[in-house]
Amino acid sequence: MEQLVQMDWFTLVLVGCATMFLIGEILVNMRGLFALFGIVAISLYFYFYLTDFMTVAVMFSIYFIGLLFILIDGKFLGDGTLGIIGIIAMVVSVALTAPNFTAGLYAIIGLVFGAMLSLSFLKFLPRRQVWSKLMLKDRLTKEEGYTTINEEYLTLVGKKGVCVTDLRPVGTVRIDEKDYSCVSEGQWIHKGTIVEVADVDGTKILVKKAVDKWHKRK
Image 1 (cartoon, helix red, strand yellow):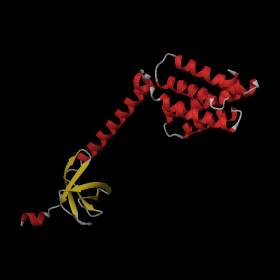
Image 2 (image 1 turned 30 degrees about the horizontal axis):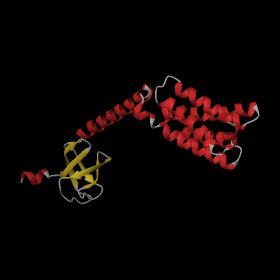
Image 3 (image 1 turned 135 degrees about the vertical axis):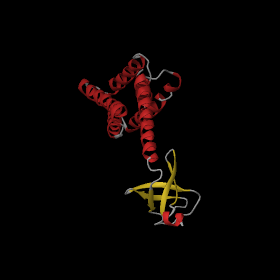
Image 4 (image 1 turned 60 degrees about the vertical axis):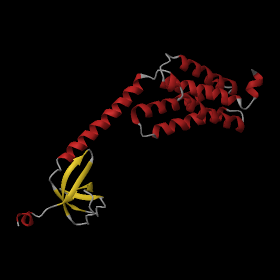
C-alpha cells in the first residue's frame, strides 16, 4: 500500500472513486452503499497524504461542503452559482492535499472523471425519486406556461395591429401596445401596414392585411 501511495496517479484513483460514488449516491438510490464507499475512499485520500488530524478535518469538511453546495444548487436554486463555488471547494481540497503538483493534477482529473462516471449510474440503477419529481414539476410548469401563452394568443383573434417590421413572412406586429412575433399568410407585408389576426396555431400568430370596412361595403 505504501508503494501505491507514493505513485502520483494513485490520487486519481482515490479521488475518482470517492467522487463517483458520492455523487452516484445523490443521483441513484443505493441505500447508502455508494455513500459508504465514497466516504471510505476520500477519507483514505486525506489520511494518506496529510499528517495532521486538524488539517485532515479541514480538507474533509471543505470537500463535503463543496459537494453539499452542488446538491443545494441542483435541487433548490439551479442558477449554477452555488454549484460553481462547490466545485471550486472540492478542487481546492483535493489539490492542496496532494503531495506534489503532478499528484494534485491527477487528483483534479480524478474529480472530473469521477463526476462524469457517476452519471452512468442513471442508465442501469434506480434514480432517486426527488430527481424524478423535480423533472416532472419542471415539465408541468412548462406545460402550464405553454397553455397560458396559448390562451393569451387566442384572445388576439380578430384584433388589429400595425407591423413594426416587414413580414417576410415572419415579423413583429404591435397589438394593443404589445409586440408579438407573427406570420403572414404567405404574403410579404410592409412595415406600417395594418393587419388583422386571422388565426392562432399553438404559439404561432397568423395575420393578414386588414380589410377597410368602407372599401368592403363599396
